[in-house]
Amino acid sequence: MLAWFMLLLAILLEVSGTLAMKLSDGFSRPWFAVSTVIFYLASFAVLAWVLKRLEIGIAYAVWAGLGTVLVALLGVVIFQESISWIKMVSMSLVVIGVIGLYLGA
Image (cartoon, rainbow, N blue to C red; front, top):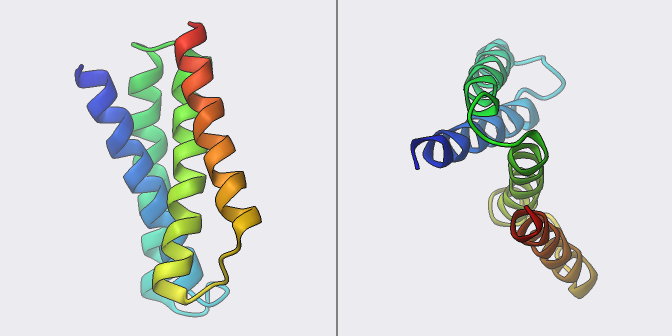
């Protein structure tokens, strides 16, 4: 159970890094540029710990898939990015794919 909690932490750190990268404005804002690096390094460190305890296919699928969906949703909410039914269906398919990989294990 701890490995799954840590995987969630790795996802949140990666998402934070991605948001900081967006806010860095092409790395022209030093605070956000440094934050990007720190969040990504922390995310990879936690993910490395998780990979010692969970199957790589499952852990990486959850990390990448849910991170992608979360970033897309936050882009809509925070940055007023567009949302369409195609985007919503696509995000749903990512989640369904992650669940399928988990159940297939």
